[in-house]
Image (cartoon, rainbow, N blue to C red; front, side, top):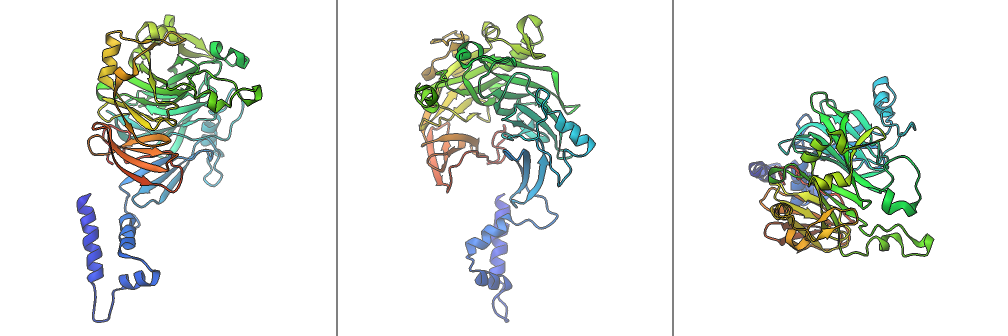
Length: 453
């Protein structure tokens, strides 16, 4: 990379030096005509890719309510492909020919034809925690679906509908060898399709995480081998899966540990205020390898809508589910490249929390809990689980890791900044102002075991 930029600088210098007896160079003439500085010209050269030359990286972006995935190249920033996923795309025929129509109709929800989606969180397939570029998985957060995109063809090959969740925010997230695709519930609801009044929220409404079993050879999710873990009706948010020393574990954050369902229509405080009263919310910690074994035994599961579900009490009894308090109204949760640390953001907390996986395991092994929640899940002590905290700023949403040891980048929605900090030395390194309220953020391979910065 250094050599590449040295070559760019040398080339630029030669162009500027290319004075002839006939006067200034064509390069300088264009710069003068367009009012460009040397810095402008250097910026243009950095992103220029001649026709036919491959970009160094490809970025896969969820298209939100367009229902598709956008692919662009880096450094050129050229759009390369729009992949039709949940929405018909007339200009490329997706959803109109026989094969793609069949894929799109796999996404029908309870017999209802759905032709739109809210594409949220793409995830590349992994081998040993590193991206292998074979498949892309992405969720539809509005209609609780997951799509599989085959990157041999850059086409959607499968859509599966979650049989028990009504909405999913935290998806898709993969185990390090793409054994499972994790997809977590957003808004708690009855897991069956039966109606229950909101007054039954605490007792009947549930959250959870679905483990979609992926068959690499077939390139398809195997629904009959998939299962879910029941969670309390805290609104589950994002997830990350352990790697390295934390392999076999996963982490899902949540909001509304208050179990608030009121609002101004009932003469109560607004919903946002009611579900933000507590100083902390709950990070779910669970052993997906143990849960996968439990799901194979009929005595450990309930069948809901034809789908295997592990109840909370079964997971707790088998030491596979725990809680730890986390930042108020969290959003991002990210496992470090070596798997030793879990970084949690807080939309309503100026601090980033860095949890130490070894400390968490020690507390679990020693059965050292500060109590249980309303649903009987053991709660770990937050202070004893933390490696440390760093004050970053307001509206901390997402994180992505840099190439240097301990480096991480975080988005601050309220402060409109990106902050670079060191999660091992627990110090802020730099901040950059952004001209909008920034949310999602990504560095190259920044969520893998081998981030490139």
